Length: 81
Image (tube, rainbow, N blue to C red; front, side, top):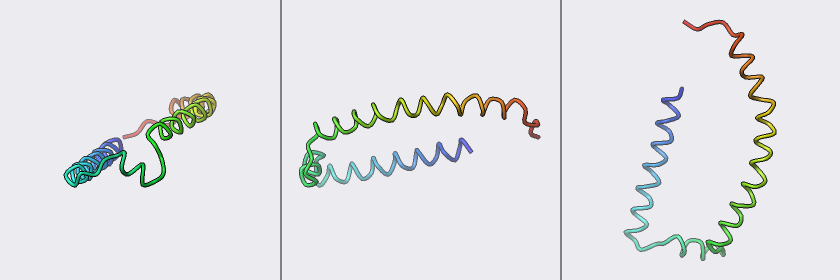
């Protein structure tokens, strides 16, 4: 399972690199794309900052419940193989 997820991330990274290289070859920059979308890099960074500040406490709150439940299930599940 972990190997499959790792390969998926590697495929995404390779595709992003290939597309980025192609766009760079065509002289298309991030600023141009953001301008076409009506955004600035400062707006994108502010949006990311606001969303991380919202998501992180919620994820930690969920982790307080999920992690102990997972540990208990892991400890009491029968051995594999």
